[in-house]
Image (cartoon, rainbow, N blue to C red; front, side, top):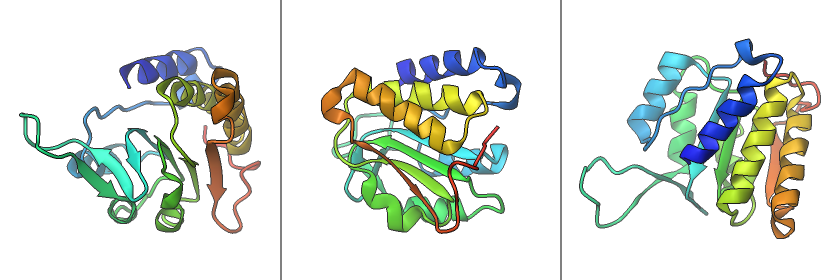
Length: 180
């Protein structure tokens, strides 16, 4: 995940609208750090990179020692956390395996979500994120940014080309949604 963040930051630094973008990373995130980040930064995009499951995403365990079992934040709890702010993010990116079931939980509070329909390799996930955020930072629409990320996935791993999915709420046109 550190490689993904570094590559995304480098892509944004090289963009024409880089001064309009701020990236806040919360490594080993859990529910508390998610809510704190929403309160402190009021992001337009929330991006999750990590392990996903059909019912949620893996989050950090509060113990310093390795827990006996991992923790999963359900999509329902994630949705409630995102909605528990006066300014929920416009877009949620779940760059995690099998996150497509988040649709019903995350629309609303978000206007759009990017999910992965199946498993996705680290290389393909990183390729998606780098091109997606480079396009956002260049002033491209959400649809164009998604398309560029999807092309990067196809180039990195043709078997995963159909894995990313953009889902938007009713009455939202992703070709008109500019996030910079």
